[in-house]
Image 1 (cartoon, rainbow, N blue to C red):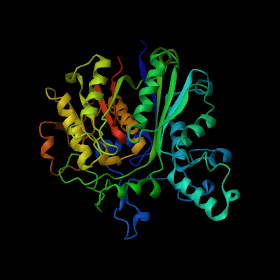
Image 2: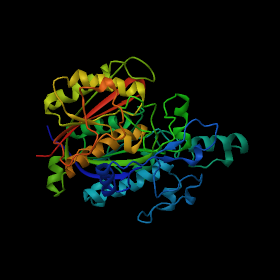
Image 3: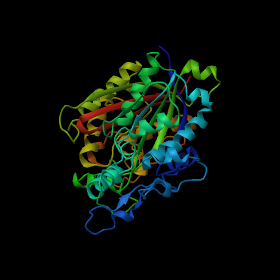
Length: 418
């Protein structure tokens, strides 16, 4: 079977809007979490998000948005974008340049795109409210394509003239993991030579605050310690938005055009809990099977894994479930483990590809990101090699986990090329 390699990446994140900035934040354990002014009402029980810097997308009119002058976006494209569509459009420009792709290599029958997002809750609410209050003719003709769950796919396929496979994935916090895995399969099966995979979220009031109703968000008002995966006093996650794009290629195709290979995407695994609509299996059984499947398909053992980027969102139940899953698979191995959500916040359907991108950077740039803000390690995590500082040496083989509503679990496996 052909090998799948990563040749390009683009980042619009709470810890940096370029690859260089993201690496710097990871090395220095510099988080992107802040007090969020729209949550300042005393009736709102949460205070924090991890916002995107350099972009202002609060207006309901995209033409009022501001974004870095490096990006040039035609008006007709901009008018159909939700906030996370803007982030994704910019991350796509980065990824195309980073991979050294020519226009004809982006738009051809052998190049496809898979995306992941929850849609734009803010846009949907705004348009429905206008419809009810002012009438249907007062709604934007592009209100649907800028709102519903497929908005990322609609807009990017059109804007970048994608001719190959395309679809959107919606499995909550496992969404972009599924998008990556299925894109991997497209290349392995010979259906496509190249795939863009995109994950993005608005990360604003409407997309984050509903999680407070689930008691899933931290009540902490301290940005420096609020997101603390694996700490015994963790009390919920900090939400974030942004976009990450990875370019996957058949190894032969990448080498033929002289591309720099950042990492090899070796395999993936998935499994379901079959347990609860919102919370993970208490013993982490589904995630354990997903990790076992990824290892099996790569023909690797637990001892071959150098580093695990955990899903661990800093919720009491979620972290504990993953701890138990990790102990099931890695009971006789001691890979380094961290959760970079302590720095980035939890990106929901963006999370999996954000962390996959971090894993690619760790392999390519030679460092292992630490798990920040742990003051008192959860006693249940004793025995796991959870590193608290970023290390200056990089892993060769990485597993990264994601878990979503309904017990959807995805594990992705990357390693140094060659």
